Image 1 (cartoon, rainbow, N blue to C red):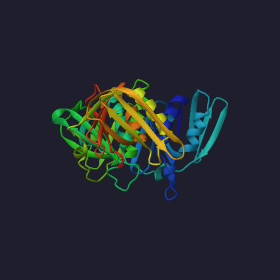
Image 2: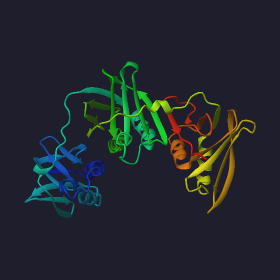
Image 3: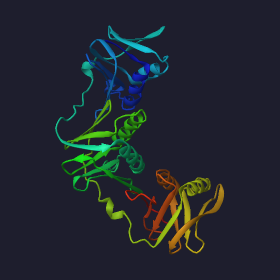
Image 4: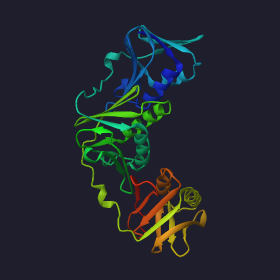
Length: 372
């Protein structure tokens, strides 16, 4: 194997695939990435057996071949090279890399031992706009469960609703819920899947990196009963799906609110950050919605640090309420609103409250209050 490519091309590819390579003492080759040079292209591949990322890079291939090397070593070395062309050559079970006046040899393992996660060639195909998918994922993945006690919650529900041309994403960790609807550009059959948390994060990372470099405007999705394949620009992501039944999250989305407040997102975010310095051990802050005073009062108390009281102007309609919320969850929701006009809708101090952007109807964020 021998090929030449630019440092920027190989560095970009490695940044996208190296996050999937994992430390595995039982199967050491999973620490490696596979470099596969063919006559017309070079593929950079990593997998953890559940998820695989394949990046195609432009290169001048002199001798086809394949080899695997440690992801961490190769990535760190390439990032330290000067921005010039890089020559890769396989010699006696070592990958020799030359750039300008520097060179190195990295020991690796045979490509024959690298596990392959085959991509489905048949299934249901869908088309989504890149920017909408990127934005939607960022708004939803914040609510995924952080552990695998309930695997279906440690992922994102994806519902392809062809009849209404909608792609609906939802995630919840039982303390909060995010739902985002975007337009489904193309699709022939309704489909409902759960993608793992790591897959959702990697899809967002890959399309975010490439879209910043004027990548393709659409993302192509292929689904089978047990697998999702994402094709975007020079990248392909292959992942197994979560086998389970996602709970009917729509039952916890509140309605028939007693209080509605319109406010400045930037102002409330600033006050929440300040109040968090004095929050209790459960990260709780109290929001009081006052129609008569046309404001939202923010307060927090800690036996260790003291207390904080402030207020911001707001258009409040309905009854006066106080509600105790986790400040981290609240900030996550505020940070993912696109504009500066936010809306709070509340039933009472013990029921879930709804946070959304004033001008956007296809995204909502639900927070469970802390019981006082």
